[in-house]
Image (cartoon, rainbow, N blue to C red; front, side):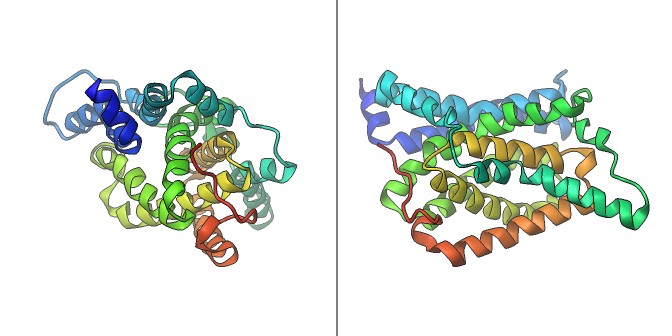
Amino acid sequence: MTKDIWLKKHPLAAYFLLAYAVSWFFMIPLALTKQGLIDWPLPFSTHYLAAYGPFIAAFLVTFITSGKSGVKNLFKSIAKWNVKPVWWIVVISPILIYAILSVLNYFLEGSFYNQNLLGEIKYVPNWGIGAVLFWILTYGLGEEVGWRGFALPRLQTSRNALSATVFLWIFWSTWHLPAFFYLYDTSILIPFLIGQFSGAILFTWLFNSTSGSTLMVIIFHGTFNFITASKGGEGLVAAVLSTLVIIWAVLLIILYKPASLSHLEHRVTAE
């Protein structure tokens, strides 16, 4: 009973603690194995199970604090597909930008990019075009139901959109920390943090602009990873996309201001 009362009074704190606990349950052993501190026969493909920490945390905290009606509202935002067509263009824009760069490369170098490389993902077999679904259903769904679907509306209840985004960015970035000991190179830490912050601005803008469609953020996250986290997106492609995201984020702050980061001039808050 005491735990239930604490959870209902501090749902965000409970969410962050649980999201970290579930994800780091998979990530920390991988980091220790990579660093040679333990000798466990862990397949590094379990890295992708860590994606579901935010999802599981959001579901459990919502169920405990708001019951079935809260869970229903959480999942309603995941199924919110009926938005203006422009938002569908936005969420697949990483793929469109990749296609444009591939055409430009044809005119400059005489060949298109090797699209088969987009299916090459670390630690798992080549998924081909199915890799886009893989990213949407792992790090898209697994992360965004928690970060944007659960946490962002609650943060925006008492904060403007920008300050809520900054707060969320700190926890979102720190959540990735163990991956720097088995997946990422520490030399990319600063660019990583800048990219995360810019991405957080875009996700808040997309979420608020679609009146709380977690689905749109899930798909955008998935298509962005589909391009940048594959061998097909290494080098120039990743650099161009990352630069565009940074510029995009700056323009959003200037155009729409910190209050809502959206043309709708309101932010989505928890019910």
